Length: 113
Length: 115
Image (cartoon, rainbow over all chains, first blue to last red; front, side, top):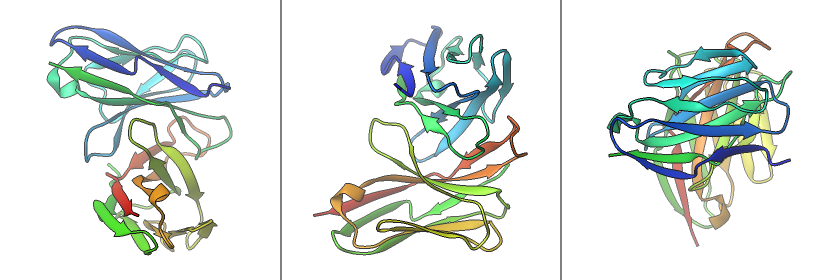
């Protein structure tokens, strides 16, 4: 199993541009999450999904959108990128029946200038 | 909003020394997890504690969940350079099995073990 994969690894955007951060998992996990990590600030939950077709907002959803058309994929869309969205983005998944175990991808480092 | 305070924020010690990292909150959590994160990588789960007063050992690492399930500690014995990294605690809350079960993370403790 590849686990949780994320693409791209790095990206530089200009203010106002849009992009999609890709996340995929091959472990048949139904729960998936998007976090952002800023220096010295821990991880903040952006959006999460409990299964295909079902998504919900986390703590910091403004400026982002998600979709979940399959169990495997959970893309994060940034519309009209702003410098405040400069961060490292992590996708995670959780298996059914387990409250506790989240498996994280390697992250995408995004810079908006 | 559930908040977790981690201390210290930075810790630099010599190889062979012992250390303790603390994670405190005014909120009660269903579980408390510890993750370790290397530069350029995602967090990796080390341990989960779910019962108040629970102690778990993982080789040289000892994890404890407070009796009231509001705080936790991570103790490392005889630290080694390979222990260097960012240690994150995360408190779990919400309803069991539900998608609303989420984690709130502390800001992390950056540990450097000098050979």
